[in-house]
Image (cartoon, rainbow over all chains, first blue to last red; front, side, top):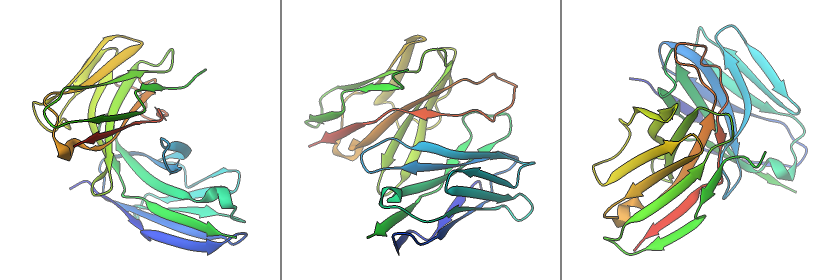
Length: 113
Length: 118
């Protein structure tokens, strides 16, 4: 069964600290993995997208890693800011299918001043 | 570009009423997706259009839900009759995708419509 599991469900850290969010998936055949940031009351916004051959991709203070062998991905946030408070959603797509998109349940991150 | 436009942003209706949600995708995109998000189930894909044609509607919960895309710049999601369990945030997203091509495309989400059925 195609699944995407994210951990932790929620996380609270102090402003300026780093954090890492985890995503494990069983989607097959794998095509790509995306991390989205969703602010409260807004639609998800893409942070990174990685295909099978990519194992790291950065977008400013966000760095995503992908291990296609172990089917794991992580999203590392460096020097967190209050504006990083949001839900982070891991999304995995299957090959040759635009609609076989499996969403993780998200990690709710809160940054405290 | 204005991005994906959805209307209304909020909708409150009574059980049994018809609800129509609207979406204008980003100009030039040929794929459109309707999603539903709830606290319990997270984001779920309801239906996907490519070049105005419904490709996959396996996520549509039941016959009360229907979606149309009469042209490349407009889509509707209709619920008739609505029920309290339909209360959720409905997102529309668009992208450019070629069937049989690489799937490394980007989806752009609209702001969502928050539906409350009482």
